[in-house]
Every structure is written in structure tokens, then in C-alpha cells.
Amino acid sequence: MKPTAVTWAVLGLIALEPKSGYDVKRIVDRSVRHFWAASYGQIYPELRRLEEIGWIEGAEAPRGGRVRRIYRISGAGKRALDAWLRAPDTRVELRDESLLRLFFADTMPHEDALTLLSWRREGYRGMLAYLRGLDDGQGKDPPFVDLVYQWGLDYCEWGIEWCNRQEQRLRRLLEAA
Amino acid sequence: MKPTAVTWAVLGLIALEPKSGYDVKRIVDRSVRHFWAASYGQIYPELRRLEEIGWIEGAEAPRGGRVRRIYRISGAGKRALDAWLRAPDTRVELRDESLLRLFFADTMPHEDALTLLSWRREGYRGMLAYLRGLDDGQGKDPPFVDLVYQWGLDYCEWGIEWCNRQEQRLRRLLEAA
DNA sequence: GAGCCCATGTAAGATGTTACATGATTTA
DNA sequence: TAAATCATGTAACATCTTACATGGGCTC
Image (cartoon, rainbow over all chains, first blue to last red; front, side, top):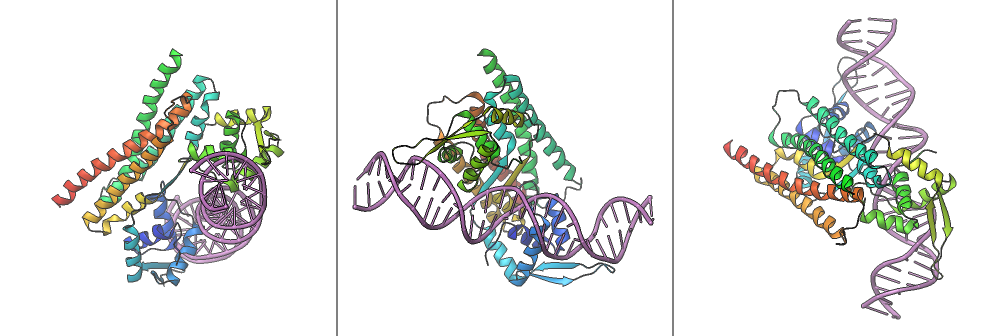
């Protein structure tokens, strides 16, 4: 079994609580999506693979006449997930178009380049608003789920402040020149 | 012409200074790689596309008997790059396996979960060391190239401190429970 | 009964990495 | 002379998104 990128996200969510594929997608979009996205085209095939190798078990659970299949994690699945959890790997892949623009911004007039920086700040603000919108106000998440949510909030706040500081620094620098 | 993900990275680097495909790859790996990676399999085909539509112009520039093709940006290419630079889009895509592990860490014993957090800190330390290694000590980068480099350093330092703070907070929280 | 949400699924296409093939030049 | 670097390129594979097809149930 060669795990794919969605393997652990799907398996982990099923482990938290039995779910349908549709549920997995919905929860992904409301929780890990900003650092680990997954689409239907990945999720449904992955569920079949996971069931084939016996890491999850599916059962028909129709709601009325509506087809529905609920998956729960197996003992083998739990062991596999636990082994993955303990891996020390921390690889990060990032695609940040705003940073790419800033990298090439030296060809622009200073004011226009600084505008890019203000847009970056707005990007962080937008993400912060999005994350805050996910909070249902109940505040009952387990500590590490909450930790990761907090990471998102803290990262955005740091980013906003970073843009402010750099804008001030660059204004001084560019006006002096 | 439908721009791909590498279009602007390649065009921007050619705009800074005429380059071969090999140069583009080398410079990408030493500058924008941590937020905008590109492989040979993307770069060489992209250079042909860009030449076909007239945004860059290639010329044979062999070194000894070694084949080599140098590309420079055209007027149309400059205009296209400038138009892209002014786009307000700030989309970010992130794949952070360490955050995914932390998200599922509530199933583990507390000490093991906190170990994940310390590994995350080591990940930031490693990236910080990598970024510092890129600095040639000359310090002659233009302001916005330097800004983006600084973003990398600052982000890593923030991340290290964030892990430290959260580890302390969680130790208190989990020991109290 | 129109429109939205629940629910499963896939085809097509875009995207991206890895590994290799080829061959010249430089360095140890 | 062996190994590293310069240099171009692609085939195969892996990954991921988008858009659509299908159909039932719920709400206005």
C-alpha cells in the first residue's frame, strides 16, 4: 500500500468519527482545508482503496431512499494512522502568488510596489475573517484541533503586522533614496 | 495564451536578466523555491511556449562545444509581466503535513503529541538554516527581493516562537487536566 | 415545483515530480 | 580518469481540480 496525499487526512477524519465521503469533504473544507485541501476526485477513490486494504470498513446507511455509505476505521487502520502520526517529517509545500509578485516588484514604481504589500495584508485579513467565520462559538474542540485552528489565526495576525512593519520600513528606505 | 503556474516565475526571472533554462532552474532553487517551486519538466516546455507567443526571444549561445540557449524578455513580455504584477490576487496554497499531524494528535498520549510540536519547531529551524545558507553575505539584493527573503526568515522565527509558546501553554493546560 | 442541500461518482484536463538519456566541460 | 557541473530535454507517472451526471429529499 502506497499512501497518497489524501490518505492520512481521510483516514484521520474517519478515525475521529464514522463518516460518509460527503461528510469527509464537508469537514475537510471546514477544518484542514487551508493547509490540506482535498477534492471529491481524491476522496471517493481513496475511500475505496482504504476499504480494499482493510483500514476502514464501509456499510450502507441510506437516509430514506437516498444512497449513503458510512465508513469506520478498523484496528489495522488505527495502527497505520498511529504509525504515521509519529513520523518526524515536517515537509511544507507553499504556493504564494503574492510573494512571487513582491519578489519581482523592484521593476515597478515604489508606490505600486507598496500597493502589492497592502494587498498582501488584505489577503491575510480575508483569511482571518474566513477562519473566524468557521468558529461556531461553542469552543469545545479538543486541545490539538484547537491548536491548529489557533495556528491559522496567529499566522494571519502575524502576517498583517509583518506587512505593516515592512511597509513602514520600506517607505523610510525608499524615500531616503 | 493561457498562463500556467510557472509562466510568471520564468518570465520574471528572464526579465531580471537574460538566462538559459538551466539558469532559471538554478535561480528558482536558490530564491523563490520555498514558496514557488518549478521543475525542469515545467521550465523547458514553458520557455518554448513563451518564445512561441513572443514574450521572450531565444538565441543560441554555446559555451565551447556545449549547446546553450539564452532567452531575453521582449516588449510584449514586459507588458504582460507588468499587467500580472498589478493583479490584486493573493491566493495561497499550502500543504503542511506537520499541521495535519497536530490536527489528529488528540488521539495520542500528551507527551507524544507535544513531541510533534517540538518536531515542528525543528522543521522551522531547518528551514531557517537553509535560508540563511542562501545568503552570500554580499547583501546587495534590491529592496523587494530582500523583502521576500526577509519574509522567509521572519516567518521561521515567528514559527519557532509560536511552537515554544504553545508548548508551554499546552503543558500547563494538559497537566491541569 | 423551483431551488437548494444531500450523496456518490467519474472523465478530462491541468499540474507537477522523478528519473533518465545525452553529451560537453571543469575540477579533483 | 573519475566525478561534478553545465546544459537540454522528455517519458512516465503521480497528483489534483473542475465540471458534470445522476438522483433523492427538504423547504419555500
